[in-house]
Structure formats: structure tokens, C-alpha cells
Length: 135
Image (cartoon, rainbow, N blue to C red; front, side, top):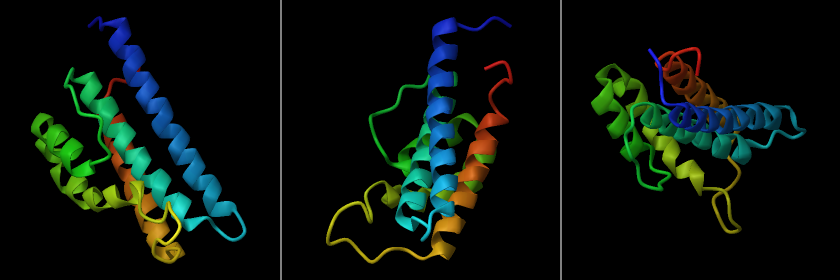
């Protein structure tokens, strides 16, 4: 089946940005000390961009938002088997801004960061599995 080249490029662009967030989060794990707040931020961004890639693939418009709840609901309408995973990922939404500014809560611990990154990886892999390999 032939696909619109412009759509494929959009999907590839979102997936590439998502992959960069995955690599950044993994890099932040190796810093001394580990950059836990950055791991959380990139985990949220990884999920957000993967979901936007999936919505692009299905020609579904989305608002300019960081809300994994909103994006997840849109994706679930396309594939309800994603619902349990995306519901678990929804709380990552707050990491788009939490810990990013002075006066925010203390740095998160490595357990929280690892949990978020592992969940983000699961979402990323689930989305990749639903988009044709040639993309």
C-alpha cells in the first residue's frame, strides 16, 4: 500500500524526536550524579512525541499540548488495546514542567526516574509496533 510521502515524513520526524528523547534520558542516567529530573522530562517527552507520531500516522489532528491524558485518549480511540499502557503513562504528564524551575520540589530519586523511563520505553515500543516498519 502506498502512503502519502508528506505524512511519512511527519511521522518519521516525530519518531526521530522521540528517539532523541530516549537517547537523552539514557545519557542522563550515566551522568555523575544521574540527572534524574532530566530523565523524567525526557521520559514525558518521549511518550508525547511517540503518541503524536501515532496520531499523525492515522491522520488525526491534535492540539499543541503536553497532556499525555489527552493524547492517550485520542490514541485509545484508534486502538483500545493501548488503553492500559497509556493510562499507566498518563501521570508522566507532569514531568513536562515539574522540577524544571527554581523553587520546585526536590530532585526526584533514581527509582522514580527509572520507573518513568521504563514506562516511556514500553509506550515507545508499543507505538513502533503499530506503525509499518518502512516508516
